[in-house]
Image (cartoon, rainbow, N blue to C red; front, side, top):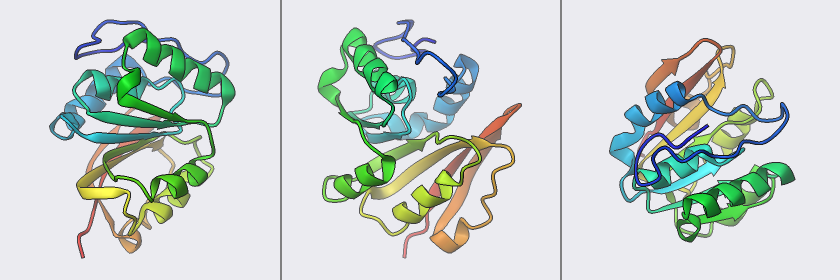
Length: 185
């Protein structure tokens, strides 16, 4: 697993040992960032269920101003911190070692985000729980984009009732990325 582009291009990142995380493949990450590129420059990013931190680190490498990583697994937290040290991106990052919902409650009182990426464990309904929390939240700045990585079987029929719409959808062999926007009231 490596950083694909930007100031940290080609640096290899550590991944979390075991099967508890699913590192995003380079080809999938490249597709993801081809879509996200217009949103990345100088953005504030939130990486939920961050795993090794590869997505947030890629965003920082490509010009994001700041990224908050949220992860509760201790091994993954250690991996994120090591990867940030190795890439020398620590100054632009904040790492929260806690449950995602607790982190969202804390972050609600701070500056919002231009881009939120989440890759929760598949098929547990966590996408909906997080999106319900984000709906109407001060965590979303202006024309923020939310990216949800989920299994192909995940139901998103509830998005409109929460005030979200699908900007773009990218399907892969076993999973997908949904790029969501928030309807302005």
